[in-house]
Image (cartoon, rainbow, N blue to C red; front, side):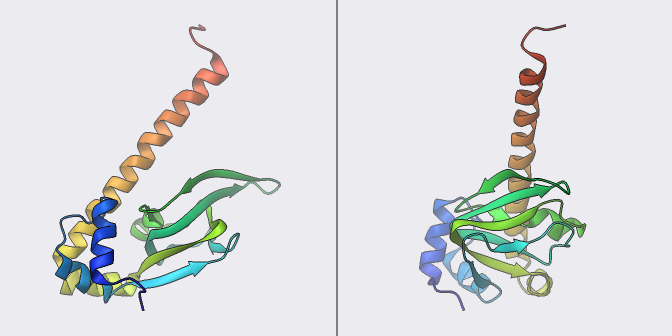
Length: 163
């Protein structure tokens, strides 16, 4: 059960550019396929090595992504309200490279499980297209930020203008 009304979720989607071409009735229909999940601060949402069986829209709080090399845990990044999480492993069905866990204040998000996604593809294809477009934008942002991070690291390691 979702604690938001269709009207509230529609407004949230519009404010965060999520599936923004959906009508309020379509958002209401989508709600039938979603679950609301909450995690306390520090609680693991998914671990590296797991294959994603769900994706989620963060509606409150933040998620931290960490990497563990066998000795040390390193924070790789955070995602906050209005972002999609879990889409990479969900769509490519490959094991996750990072651990996802709730930040200190916890996190709440709307989850679309694989079985419900499969139903949604058949029953509401227009809604699925909107979710896929959102996932593409999310992955595009990730790749763009990664490029900026690599560039900054290169400048840091090699200095400006060195040959």
